[in-house]
Length: 145
Image (cartoon, rainbow, N blue to C red):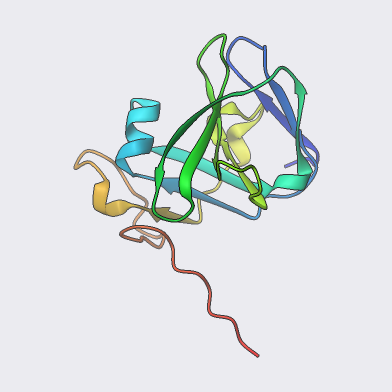
C-alpha cells in the first residue's frame, strides 16, 4: 500500500485521498450492510477522519440507526449511487471514517483483520476461519495503567 492512497465512485464524480495508514480493516455482516451492498456485507477500511479528504465531488448521506453511535452516516455518490463511506456519526464529529474497500483504486492490499455482526451473516456467506469473529461489534480493548 502506498500512502497517500486514493479511490472513488464508479462514475468518477467522487474522488478521495487518505494520507494515513488504515487503523483497522474488517468485514461487517450486519443486515444494514447487506441491504446497502446487495451482498453478504461490507469490506471496511477505517482511517483517521483528519487524514481523509474529498478531492472531487460532494458525498450525499443516508442515516441508519446504530447501537454504537446513535446514527450511522453512509456517504454515497448522488450520480451513480456508489457507496463510499460509513461509520461516522450524524454530527460529523467522529475521529474515524470507514471507507468501502471496493472504492479503493487498488483494493488488492485490503486484508481484513476480523469479522463483525456474524450473528446476522447469511448461511452462504464465507468467512475466513482464521480471523476473529464477533456476534455484534468488536469489544473495545481494555485500557491498562
